[in-house]
Length: 429
Image (cartoon, rainbow, N blue to C red; front, side):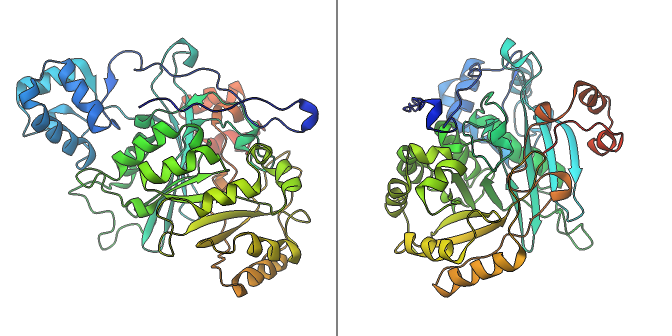
């Protein structure tokens, strides 16, 4: 798939905060050493089998077998593939692995939310031969388990209220690295065929993964090729088996790629909106200076497959004294007129150094009431995982957050709770 190109021209610094960042580097096509088959598309898996001599006549059958063991059974060793010949298993083991990203830390919130710091396989000297690190969050809910995945190491954008936006953009994640986050979550939740995490007496905070949201680190539509490919792997009904209607991709408004996302991924769309006037949104979401509200909302109205059953979710973070007046609520309703929509009101999740505060609860309720009375669903998103810095807008890779001493403690097996309890006040979320 061809790499998407963008107009990344920067405005003069006097025009306001930078709109975008450029990545430190692009990952190599394959990691150093033996590469993992976990997370690959069917096309890529077929190519890997061809590379070790599987004949074209056998490729379709062998791809189906290996695909099933990886994406249905969660196999971690080629020897577990009982219907694959000994010869092929030996060939696979010589050339490849079934390695997942390494989980550096797992934190579990009081509310059952889990946050994993994952280290990807190194892709070359630019990865410092260690591999990039990202965060991924699992949120158990009534009848569902939602996994919030990252699409970049860092973020292209510079949204002023979001902590992830304050770190540099290291690189895009590959499609396999995005899918591998789902695999890791299923490993930790015993969420594979033959296992039953919701059996009687099971932990209610370990529900199977039913929903995926691309709301972790990164702007998904600046990594659109990998995002589209990863959605295809997640939604394969002979593999991970997730419904496309339960996969939501959130964008701050990369207008040129929205139609392609809908046409090729058939994913649900969420818009990180947060303001109803261009002058304010230029500050909160500087990408608005490139694709202003009128252009963004026109693209929303033409999003492929949009109807009352496939509504767009508009995310609106509640910032005290900034965007939370009755007039803002009424203007929001006016802007979205005619768009099948749901509006998620998000209490601002504070992080050290932020200049913003969360709106008072009474103000949030009044804002929600105005939107609801206009005919829009306007749930107020309950903050989840705040105590482990896993809530919306709080993610920031641990390599950005912790001092060298803290990182060494983590790698020596001392959890993040021990780091912070020990008084290391590194740059937290």
